[in-house]
Image (cartoon, rainbow, N blue to C red; front, top):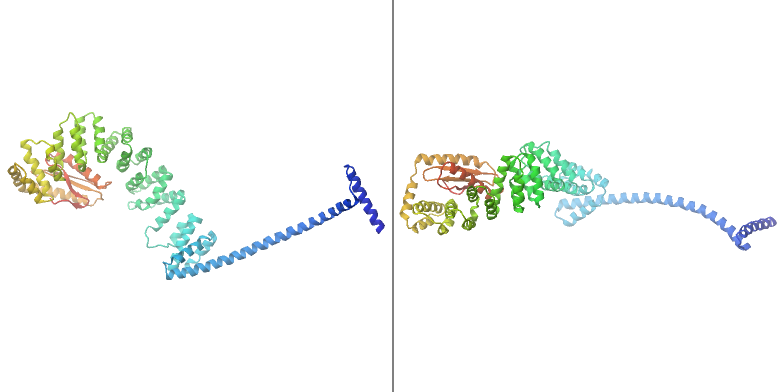
Length: 512
């Protein structure tokens, strides 16, 4: 055996030496033995490596099983902790520490774990159910937004809060505008005259930023169902910041075929760029629409910046006399002093006549102002008694003492007193006529929404005119439009006295 062993060893050594010799390298017998040993060892390592891989794989499977078991135990522990916290919060709902801890625990759950928690709601008390449902809603908003509404419809955690579902919808839309458009489109089906879109404005405002054209198409569908959209469009216009945005809105509103929708957007656009507004209005092909909207634009611009509006209008007017008449009718009463200054600066007009008319229009609404600015006008002798009489009547509405003191300052006091006496005994039929007519008009006016105003004009002979303006952007706007409408009727009916505001909202400013 030994001889055989050595023979094999020599043979191996010879083969290895011969092979290495071919590479011009020498190797000692001991190195050869080492090489042989190395081959044997490497073969052994390959077998061991396979065993280690099998063992590692088995360990991973075992580890996963162990981890799953551990997680189940942790979740079970979490659910128990949630139950304890609900008991605490049922007893003391204001416990901030318990509230925070409950929120943290539920926030760490997966969607499957939250859904498992939902299954426990039916067996809980209403108090616990509402507390837990609030937290679940917050979790679903993050994990599965499209499941939130169905959950809230089944488990509303705030049944006494009327706008809770709208609040949740708003949160959904903030996360995904497409959900908002889908919900808004679904609402068209059941929309009717009683639908109030203002309840959804927080959602609508978000949708407007994403796709205003798509939103306005949906608003058109609501309008076709009888839903009022004016307030919604007005609120949307508040969010516009550039002239280009207003220009786009105007193009979109043309499809609604309702000129009243332009009122507030046009006011906002005028504040940014009056030139752009009138350029846009000039491009409107329909003559009636162009005329109506241009008249409104002039009126709104006069309210905002009467001097700039008056300068621009007068400079481009083909009939300056007619334009000036309209300018003075539209000048805001509260900026009358500015009007007096502006009139003094105009050339080629009868400044005094326009100033007298301006003051005469204020004898009822602001007689004290008229009294203070009498020196700004020149009155002919045959005009003085009637003019002072109107101031006296205006002062009388607020204070009989003021009216009498004013009367005492007049050099022609007796002439004015004669007019006072004559007015105090009007023809009975004439008085009954205007009172009945105005009362009937006011009864209709009373049912409309504010801001609104009712204007009247009554002269000494019993001739009268009245008009009202309702559902306007603000009280100032309502007053201005009511006065303008009343003045038109006053001119047609030859009523000598100027129009004044009889009521703001439902409150009468004086008695007939």
